[in-house]
Image (cartoon, rainbow, N blue to C red):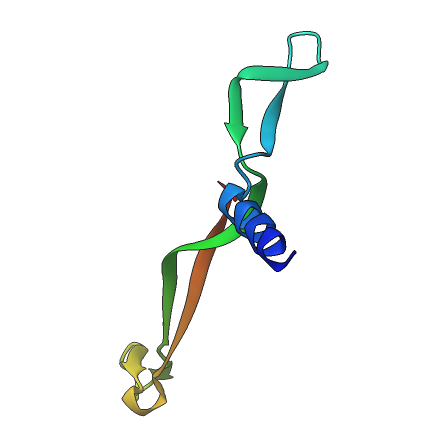
Length: 100
């Protein structure tokens, strides 16, 4: 009995999802859902998040002041000690369909 159970479990594991067949659906010209016979594949479709790239944003803020000296025209003067920088890094992912 034990050998039969072991053989049954082994056959189940080896068959995997190749026994499952997925048929894709498409919309025809009239707007009805119908089978797409060209896209019949083995396995169960699963959606997973796949990282594709990273997005980096660097923000620099500069501060200036207006300086007036006597009767001369106003002049903008940069304040270097007030400059600030920040970075924002984000991973960008997309949904991909895989067959399991």
